[in-house]
Length: 142
Image 1: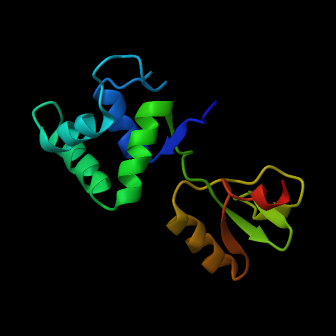
Image 2 (image 1 turned 90 degrees about the horizontal axis):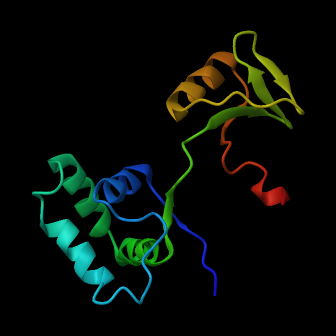
């Protein structure tokens, strides 16, 4: 059975990559590799990580049981980073595609902001429109 790679938040992806974990996953025939032991070791041993990496991983790992399963699946099946945030401004069926002259069009490539707050400021200045997650736009149409 073929599994998709697990999408991880970029900080977690960076920590796993820095720790030397394969992005392709671990095969079961690798002997005594135990994902739970590995995750526990990563969360309790800080000498291999910067304190900030250690804190990020520990907070993620202990936030709830779903994140623990997510990390186990990432180690089993491979992982990749979640897409970078892309925020756009939508008015009706059109997207802002030229921020300098405030041009909107339904068939144009939307202009993307990396910070939601910046897009919200533009909507407030315009007095219309809504901020949308461009990574999720169109998924309902598929």
